Length: 193
Ligand code: 5GP
Image (cartoon, rainbow, N blue to C red; front, side, top):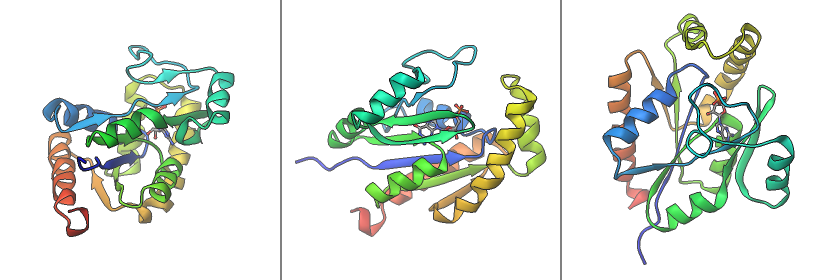
């Protein structure tokens, strides 16, 4: 039987640039990782596509998936629900693929309970000011949502202890290299061999 793949969880404060980092990581190492597409009840932003960035669902559709036990984990984030479809992830792991989940901290804690060997990486902006200016610069959220996301970022900092690695994103290219190195060295850990 082939070896099972690993779960790699990447979390980070909203606006820390984790989406950009993961996008670059996938582009540079297309054969090494697969990225799970989550379901969410939030509205699509301009340029986001159903089935590519997220599966955009109504609250009823999302709740029906919860009822049917179709999520590996799910959580609420600033008024919307987000969840990782279990079947797709489990199939890829069974094929021996390393699966990246880009999820927030509650979800990450749930994944860790079910998969104690999952690798947890937290990406953060250098400071609160750069976080806020990145969020505002994105131009996709209202001031109210930005403020809520900033508050949530402060709360999330309390859970950082549970992560294996923290990466400060002050330079995207460096950050992508660092995240890749972390994943490669984690593979070589004695317990993972
Ligand atoms: P955004 O609305 O900015 O795309 O995502 C908001 C937050 O939800 C981010 O921290 C993102 O990582 C997280 N998120 C995205 N998909 C999932 C998921 O399937 N489960 C959980 N728990 N969080 C998710």
